[in-house]
Image 1 (spheres, rainbow, N blue to C red):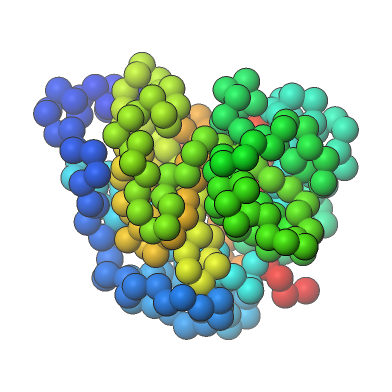
Image 2: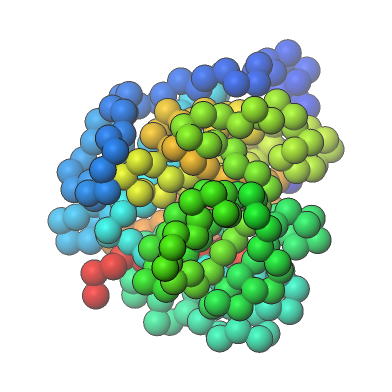
Length: 301
């Protein structure tokens, strides 16, 4: 964390602060515009690198965008129809939840999940920040707020990102878990009009604007997109997600201690750290973690 702070100060001293909303440069081949269809992607796409395969099917792939200061926004795409999601409570946040839910929904990846897991990533802000509601296994522990950005997970493990009460939940939808955090970062394929209001996206260490940040989006095909960087502005995440095809997105946690994604090349394989220079090791969610997180599992039995 000290190194991250020193790096940020040096970055400002060099006068290389990016203008908010400046489009990042793709570190790979440009991605074709997402088509409006719910059919799952099957083949490799230009600009994307396969991360996880379940037999021959690509279930997770990745691409990166280079920022003006040389840092990267890394995006992991979880392919709809090939994965399911589960929300976990951390050991200490949300407070008291891990002790009253089933162990499989608590602070570590459960044995029953482990053989199917392909990735896991951090949740949102602490409950004390009052940034939104939290529902787990159909039990509401923090009230769900209309209009807030939400990750909604159904009982079959499918997931969507959007604003609660604005198309979410759908009529007849069987919601199992909801994780809210702030307002939408991206809506209808456009970056939030609040993107330059840094206070709207949380407090950072030393009040430095460019810090570790993470976000979660959804594209027109229903794929979820996790984006993270160890030094970025809210606009960097938002514009990168839009370039990757996101039509809606929400910011998740920020600051270097909390931003983390782990992935494996095949279901049940060894999890490795997925964001360049992230603080936490690849097995953090296996040994247990203090904060809420989301697991991604292959749907194939």
